[in-house]
Structure formats: C-alpha cells, structure tokens
Image (cartoon, rainbow, N blue to C red; front, side, top):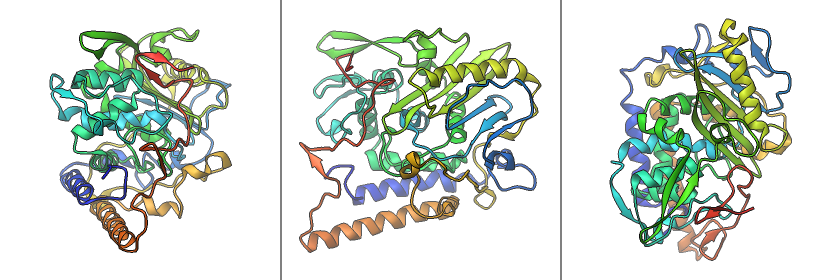
Length: 417
C-alpha cells in the first residue's frame, strides 16, 4: 500500500510516535507565545487585519496578501500585514520539514534510492533529478531539498524517516510545539494538497527555529552544489532563491542568510528571507504578491531595508512565540477572516476553532481521525469499494497545480520552461 492512501497501521504508529514531542514539553515556558491579557499567538494586534506598525517609512508598493518583519534574536515583530491569515504555503513549508527531520540523520549516511521512495510524488512537482538505483548521501539529498526544492529528495528523506504519514504527523507535532497554530500539514513537500495551509507568522517561526541548526543555515545559504547523475557523473544545481544568487535580473541582497522560496500556480509566490546587518538579523516573510515571480523578492528586500533603516526605531507590535509550553498554557489564534475568494479552498472547512485545540488533545484528535479513516477503509473494502481514495494515472496523483516560475520542474539539473 502506498503512503498517501488512507491511513494504515503503520501510519497510525507514526501518529502515535508524533505524540511524544507534545507530551514531553511541559517543563518549557510559553511566556513568549502571548502578550499579557490576550490569548492570541504573538499578541492581540497580530490578529487584526491590515498593517500593524509603530514607525514611519514602510515601503509603499506592498501587494502581498500577508507579510511580516521580525527581529530573529529578540522575537519582536516590527511590522505585519495579516500575520495570521491562512494561505497555501507552497515550498516554504519545506522549512518545517527540514526543522523536523534534518537533525535525525548523519549527513554521511548513504542510501540507494528505490522506486518505492519516489512513489506518489505529485505530478508537476519541482524535481532535483533523484534517480532510482543511484546512491546518495543524506547531505546530497538535503542539497536537493534546499537548493532545488526537489520534491523527489523530500520523499526519499520522508521514507528514510519512516514514511510520508509518519513525517506529516511529526511535522504537525513540531508546528504545534512551535505555536504555529495556523499551519495544517498534509504533505511534507508543500505542494497544493487540499487543506495544506500556513501563515506569514508561522513561516517566520519555522525559519527562526530552523536557523538555530548550523546544518540548516549552511544548506539554505548554499548557492551551488554538484549533484549525482548516476555512476561517477554529476551535474551542478543552483539555489532558486533569487535574493541569494541574483538570478533573473535581481541583485543579491547584502548579508542574506537564506531561507526558502516557494511557488505553485495555486499559492503563487511565497518567500521567507533572513539577513544580517550591523549585528542585527531580521526575518521577513512575504506571501502571495499580486505581481509576477520577482515581486516576492523585491518586496522582501524592501521590507528588509525598512527594518534595517526606519524600522530600528519601531516599537514591537507583537512577539514570535517561544517554543514549547505546558499543554494548559498553550495560546489560541484569532485569524484574520478570509477575504480573497481565490484562496478560499486553502482554508479547511468548519470554524477556525477546530484548529485551536492544543497539546495532548490535538494529538488525540489526530489519532482518532486516523483510526476512523482506517475503519472506513476496512468497511469500504468489505463492501467492494475501491481501496484508493485518490484518483491516479500511471501510479501517480493527477496534477492539481504546477510549480513553475520560481521552482520549475527539472530533471538532470535542467529547468523545464
């Protein structure tokens, strides 16, 4: 049975394993998660619609559906626009995947890829060119994830981690540990699966947590690498972060550390960037600008310039949540109401309160849902219903969207234009 089919016993075991981080975090403090007198993650102002700022000089041409500027070290949110608005994250969700899985494996471990490792990669995905039958180090697979946003590399690493279902459960648990309560994980690759959502606030949390890991920092700041092509051959891969490399007519941003870009036809362009200047490191997330693919980088650069300039005098409008916290003290989110019909199907059905249950209760809900899905599968099988819930062609999902301008699908190191 494939990993993407309704949950099996193995998938339920993965969900149970993911409960450990939630129940083991009680000694930590949740003080950084909420301001005094409010239960909104990061503070009450971040739940409001519109621009939140206490300083002058913000860039004028900001067309993104949501954005946020924060100080990485202090956690102060200097300015935001629809910080908790839930939108499709595209491959910026790979920051959470890396933050969750990267620490688990020695980078020198070698793995010979099988056909099963590459099963169920969504059609239209960005690919680095991983081939079944070729041996890769874990280090090389992570280069494929960070530089080329390769969904093929993501799926191989997810299988090394015990499977896609287990990895998704662990990513969801990690998101909740970080207080990223706007995020719902469906797949580790960030592709446009129904109900897969995040927010500018949550993506900034993922970047901040990931940058604590030296390997994460090294990978997201790497511009080029040699990738195996079979036998002793290699080909060069380049980072798709245009603020890092200066591709497509952009100027590399001084002091940029990374972090991750993303694009699908549904999500549009998303980007979280981090840069250091004068001993200060800022994080900026920009989601879904209305213009073309360079706009997400241009608006990120403009917000970084503001943060290093006029933003130095800004009084914070909120805080990035500190990881952890006791189950009883975990805060809730009051997200900005959805106002753009084009993103309506990115929001899960039902009231937002469904995503506010935290800690052990949240994990219990995941386990219950998994058991229910397994029971449905058994009943359907008994009644002669088809075992697969997802339509397939040639053993793969039908394409719902395509990843194109920022993360063009590629094989053997070539963009498909």
